[in-house]
Length: 192
Image (cartoon, rainbow, N blue to C red):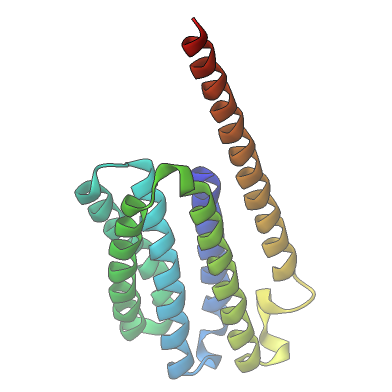
């Protein structure tokens, strides 16, 4: 589940970088700052959460790693909007990385799957809102990857949600199976 979510974050970041570079001149400065802040924050929070779940009990290390990784993603996200966009993305990424790491450390391991699935849904929602903002500002003839003739964003999101949902279901079934097995072993032990 953690690897799948991490791959989806990487995939969406590359998608946005490739999509924004050709149309960056048509996006207003205010919208650019909003896009950069929102996307960097949600990306960094998800990165921090995934790292904290992977490194349970090592809050300092997971926080530092999430800030470093978030900074790399933030640079890619903010680059189309120049130095101001990069600074905005870095600061949002810094804060999101720390918050995600703290959140991941506080949540019990048995609730990890539901939290990752929920954060992925928040991530998809934010991405959809950002796509809508960009489509409103970019003229139809220069939409590039945002045009309806290219890979539809809805298909990408639907596929991602199906993968996350399947992984969450698999993790839940696996956890329920191990819980039943544990109860059976405990019951057998008390009978002897």
